[in-house]
Length: 358
Image (cartoon, rainbow, N blue to C red):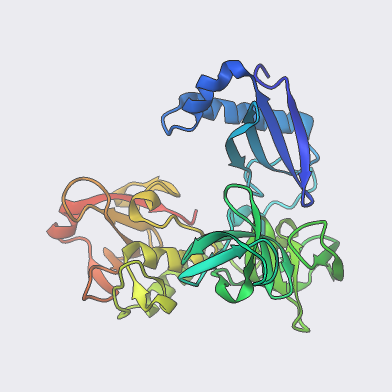
């Protein structure tokens, strides 16, 4: 394990972070680590994951933090169901394995993050419309959140929504329902194997659920499966939802009906969000998600990418619905519509196809 002679496991809010202290002789490497082209970074990340499996096989490690001196040079989140060491009896088709990041986002044009759960507390940060948030607990009408830089703050629940709605089945013999998404939160109810639950949000491997009596709580996503939501059902929902949005106006920056409409990538973000998949915000980034599919093998529910400007760089995306057609939000002054991509216009501008649901 060469680099990893000095490391420690730190508990924070009931979750574990692996802190790896790198030597001063690695300061130059630390700079390269932060660049997109650093080949060594993937090797270091891989070795860190091996360390987790070797030393902490029965502990769920949330993230890896690389430190040089007193400076944190990188944080690698280990979302539930991806690279975290799993217990031998963990379920294999959990919500945590299908939803790899938070589904909560900001609806206000600007949202203040405060030091405590009240407007009397000072503002430490501002979030913007569409920003995603990781919820770590609830306090009355406030969410306690973790910012991307690791700081903790509070935001009003009135301006946070989830684009994830589903139902699931409890797979554990007994499942605790807690007041927040952490094992440190108070238990107020118990569910049993086979119980069905309504899922109204997902954050960092935890499901926010509504009980039959209307109460809201959190359960570990590892012990909830979407028994009635097969891959094909998700694809069908993508297609049907896309069709239901035909006629919705093009709105630059729009990514939900609340915005009055969609731009091209906003449409795909919204539609796939409804079946539990979080897409990057812009088309060029979405073109790196999922898996590559050749043009001749594309299926309904795939994303198709184009270069409208003819530069060879992705600048447009649509949802393929089969039979040579896609649904997309084309341009200002237009609306969401169905078009044939078998025409010369689209064929000349076609770049690639990506499959998100697989």
